[in-house]
Image (cartoon, rainbow, N blue to C red; front, top):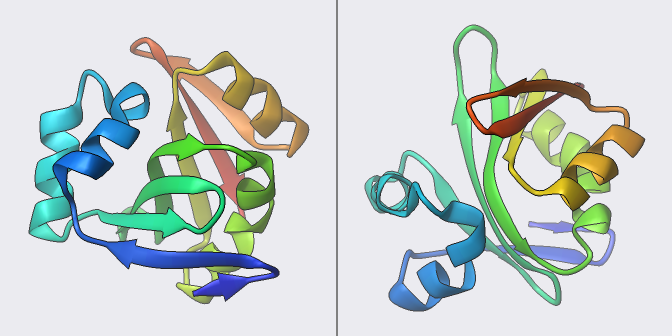
Length: 126
């Protein structure tokens, strides 16, 4: 999938990808790895940017969930996520993050913030 210079390529889970996403997926690395291996979540390589793990949830409404991401220029990536969500029929984007920089960036992009369980959860309506 390509979006204004961003090229998303779905990739299989590997130890190399686990290492690249280590900061973003700890301490849930085993759970996330199993979801990707089972096809519940998808792992994407975004050429020139990094990696993203996503999944689509159908209830209570179709939602694109961004489970984890690691790389540079994620502001560019997050700016285009509403297009990707819409192309997949999602009405909502949900992002999980513990990183302060991600919190600031998503708040500037007008995502609503909900706090709990040691992480921030952001919602964006499409």
